[in-house]
Image 1 (tube, rainbow, N blue to C red):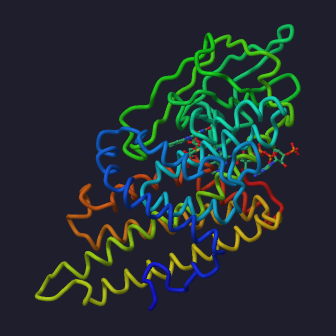
Image 2 (image 1 turned 180 degrees about the horizontal axis):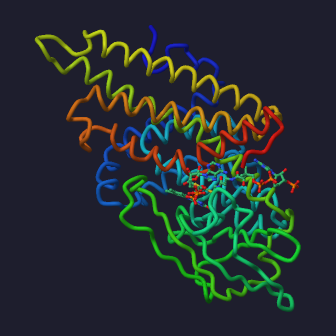
Image 3 (image 1 turned 90 degrees about the vertical axis):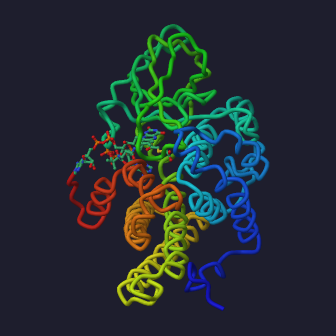
Length: 385
Ligand code: TGC
Ligand code: FAD
């Protein structure tokens, strides 16, 4: 019996362990996320009550080895992102930031002391992290960042502003990227450090169940042990983005599936001109296009997962998947919205919520245009940035 959201039986490509992750996260989303997420979206609040369950399931930094992390395959991480984003992009964002953007740099570039101190606490959800790369005047071009760290004796003193930082005001530790005399370095800045403050971005119309903040650093003094010793240059933050972009390429398919399933169910129940709208050719064309696009996107994500698990995934392949799958999800969401007619614009159904969220997903982690240019450069050898 074919499942509408998986017409090519892509789930068969998952290992038993990966299928277990899929099923348990799907259940969590059904039982814990979906009942509350509409209200959080409406109120603009972060569903913090989900944190213990996400941590207990081992989802925080799940694809990292050691230090209390679950050490799963990249595909297992991807499938968890897909299921979480079928609930809401904000929940997947939370996992992306904690695992791929805050824990990964410590895991990959941190000292042994930093890893032992932070990673087990972060995996358990007792410590939250955020990732400060973007600035008010440097988004797509992080090389233009103005935040600067200078040495003062054994300490570092950091000045600057980071903008649009997911989990900024709820994080206990911020990974802050700053210019130094020797190039861009990553710093672990703890909440409560003198001169470090946060304020939230309000009036967002997208990703409303996620906290987005500005980080202000005014002569913030951190010890020598706060710098990530293992990397200098833009390669540091961009390596973290590879991890998170990978998760997004799977996650977007979860949002797409949720929209498709909502439209399919609605089309069977809603009648117009004396018959279910599912019986109209134009509705069927929309549903056929959605189902086809979802198959294509999931196959791309899975293949990327295979490449990543065998250590062969290239950044340009990650860009291809992030760009293609977010675009698919946006198109599916918009088309699904039309199937729902007027009901589609309300929070009674998940579609408009996903549609609004996907506007952020298209922009963060490299805009659609940036990924187009990464692909263009890889294909032609010419930089068009
Ligand atoms: P470029 O000269 O190309 O490269 C500088 C150095 O970085 C290396 N590199 C990479 N390393 C690892 N992974 C990648 N994907 C890499 N891309 C480049 C490169 O080899 C070089 O290394 P080295 O050792 O030779 O110095 O850099 P560029 O300044 O020309 O920039 C290239 C560009 C535009 C593609 C890059 O800046 C970019 O990707 N911009 C987009 C910025 C972005 O994605 N920001 C995201 C912020 S975080 C976020 O949005 C979180 S959302 C969280 C959520 O809620 O889910
Ligand atoms: P800009 O870079 O100003 O771009 C504006 C437009 O110009 C875009 O369409 C862009 O594609 C286009 N453009 C730019 N350069 C070119 C070019 N060379 N050619 C063609 N077009 C171009 N950042 C973090 O560091 N950490 C986070 O946790 C984080 N979370 C976020 C959460 C949310 C909800 C949002 C919305 C953003 C978040 N970001 C975060 C920031 C995000 O990464 C940036 O918004 C993104 O990188 C784009 O930067 P920008 O908004 O400054 O747009």
